[in-house]
Length: 192
Image 1: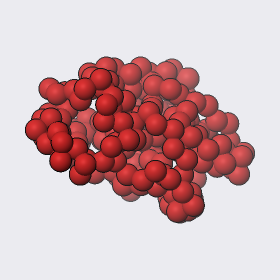
Image 2: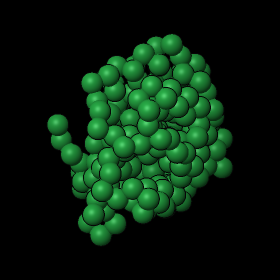
Image 3: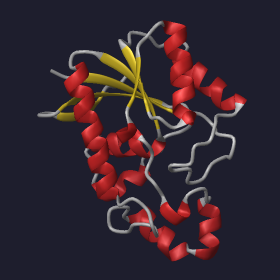
């Protein structure tokens, strides 16, 4: 039996774009509006699951209260920890670490930024989070409020892309993507 997971990326954060990773930035007013608009006509969820970082959790709590849905937090669905690159924008890294940034963009499994979480560990953490969701919610539809990196990895898998190309998947602020997950059959993207 599958679990349907509607992934919602957080909106714009107060400290802007770049590699936010494990930094715990709040949403801007625009970020809140982006997320409200993304879910305005969506419905059918039996619960909400959120990354514990406040850029996800505060909106998830707001929506859960508004819609009368149970909420839970899943730390396995946090963003990739970028190590020494945390909080930096790629345009700034291009000035000082262009070769390293290029290696990371070309093959995030083959190059780990200094002090960062290796992509294989990140993927294993997300897999553990998916298994927990499946065990607890098989047959249900959930809204999962998470991060671009998590969504890129899952969408790349669902689309049958090579692991090294996952950074080619574009996930905008407050983007909503629907996936189905079954441990035996893996991930599939639900269109429409």
